[in-house]
Amino acid sequence: MVADPPAPVGAANPSAPVSAANLFVRHPANPILTADAWPYAVNTVFNPGATTTPDGGTVLVCRVEDRRGVSHLTVARSDDGVSGWRVDPKPLLEGDEDDPTNRWGVEDPRVTRVDAMDGWVIAYTAYGPAGPCVALALTRDFETVEQLGVVMPPEDKNACLLPRKVDGNFILFHRPTSSSSHRADVWLSRSSDLRAWSNPEPVLAARAGTWWDSVRIGMGPPPLETEHGWLGIYHGVRNTVAGPAYRAGLVLLDLADPSVVKHRSPEWVLSPATDYERQGDVPNVVFPSGLVHDPATDELRLYYGAADTSIAVATARLSEVLAYLLTCPEGETIEP
Ligand code: BMA
Image (spheres, rainbow, N blue to C red):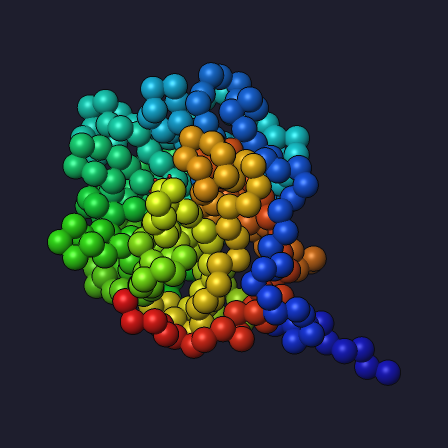
C-alpha cells in the first residue's frame, strides 16, 4: 500500500472552522514579557520583531521605551518562544543625539530572515524632528548590527521586508502618510540591493466610514510565504470617542506580484479584549509585529504589543488561517 503523500506546508485545511473570531488563541502565559523582566530600568516593552534561530530558539527584537519616553531595540531569547526569556543587558540598536533621523529613538522593528544575505534584516522606524522614517539594519548574530541607513523619508513607518527577492527585487512594505490627502495606506517598494528603492505602489487601503481599519493601516510582521500567497497580518485603526482602537486583520497577497491583493479579511482576527490589551500607556492596542511558523506542527505564533506596555503572543494553525482567508472577499472590495 502506498502511503498518502504528506500535505504540502501551508495547504489550506478544508475541514477547518472558518471563523475570524477563534482563529487566534491568546497564550495563557500572557503577557509573556513586561518591563519587570528587563535587566535595566525601563518604562515599557512592546511591538517586537520575531524570528527563530537554527537551534530552534526564538529571538524577539523588542521595542523598549526608556524612562525619558525614547525607544530603543533590545534582544530577548527563549527556547520555547513563550517562557524563560533571557534579555540582553544593553540595546542592540538605539538612536543617536547627533543624527536628526533618529534623535528621538528607534521603534517598531520587524525582523526578516534573508537566506541570500546569510542574516536577518531589521526594518524599523527611526524617529526625529522631521517625523518617522524607515531604516534598515542587518544582523548575523543579534549581537551586532550593520546599519543600512534610512530608506524611506518622513513620514513613513511600519516597514517589513519579504524574505526573498520576487522577480529580481527585494520587496519592502511601508506606510507613507500624507497630510494633504489624510491617507495612511500600505505601499510597497522594490530594490535590487536593499539601498535604492523605487517604484512605490499602493497595496492595501484603509477602509472607510466606521470600519475597524478605517483610519490607518500598516503591515505587521513580514508576510509569510505559503502555497496560496503571502500571508500578511496588518494592524488597522478606528477612531472612537474613547480614543483610537488598534486591531489585527489578514490579507493574502499574490506570490508573483505582492502588490496584488487576493483576499482580505472583512473582520479583525485580534482585538483588544484582555486587561493587558485594554489598559496600559496607550489603551486598546493590539499591534501585531512578529510571526513565526513551525512547519512540523502547523503552528503560527503571532507576537504583538499590548497597550504599548507589554508583549503577548497568540497561536493559530496556518491551515485554518488560510482556509478562512480563502473564504474572504477577493481583492480590494471596499472603495476608500
Ligand atoms: C502607532 C505606532 C505604534 C504604537 C501605536 C499605538 O502609531 O507608534 O508604535 O503601538 O501607534 O500607540
